[in-house]
Length: 447
Image (cartoon, rainbow, N blue to C red):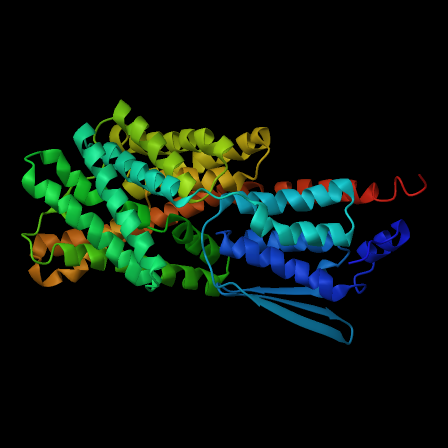
């Protein structure tokens, strides 16, 4: 692909219809990368519009439609209309990719890239962003689940056994997918493997704390990022994308729960779904568990290594605030969870500027330590055994479901609080920065 002269470079980036198909292809690539890596719909649209500004396409020319599996862009000007779309079949959270896309566009503004350079760098992102190998992700999943066992009052024995059972479940799921099994079948098999091993330890070792292994050994499979994004999209009026993410979340949690139920089908039913996971005291174990869970699950979301400690501290912050409000001030779990997520997200918007990263990259993984999906899977597990439940069991099942819904709404709204409170201010800052870069586009033209 030929390089532009300086005059051609500026003309291409200032006339929206020059190389318009290449420009639209860049927009689709950005949308595809962000959707497949777990960005919420608002962020995808913002990044695509920012890229359009760099390439000289006025926002009022563009109509962007985002669904969970398709990115569609229409350019309409007077009597001219062009519509392009791109499918997004793979969805694996990747915080490093989301961060890289945003940074690349800002760098394009700052260094005045040509369309060719920008286009090439965007196309190379998929192969240049490092990802953690499967064995590291497996260890991280195990540590994250074990951290939650510690957070919910388990002891060191429960911590170690949870690591073992979660590893078995993770590699069971990974191997089944590699052998060509359907994704949801693989999740069910992973849940089955983890629960069988956990029940084996529980039934052969007389240790009361091992009940927390049954509760936590499969928690690494709960899709926290899609769950949070489903609510964020819905409250931002991206209804189609939000509902699709929610349905996918239900399918994943349902598959995991089915695998767990199959593992316990022929066994005496342990009452692990009735185990109290609400905080009643404040302890150092909760801090250790929150840090371990947040930092470890961030590895599963491919967060950059340099941010893992900050994410772990964010997990401590939101969990400590939640537990403090619940234990000392009698807040409900959804209410305390909302305040914890909101305070953490407001603080981490500022922290993100110090760390030179996008706030989403550290806020969302930190909020995962609040474990929004644990009550969902317990609700679904009870649903599968509804015929065996008595009246108190039915009430407990409904409580899990209602509390789970309110809790995830609390987390999602709390995470979105900075944008809700300062949306106009943050938008004006971004626009000012863009205009400053655009004003310097011709500064070196005569040199």
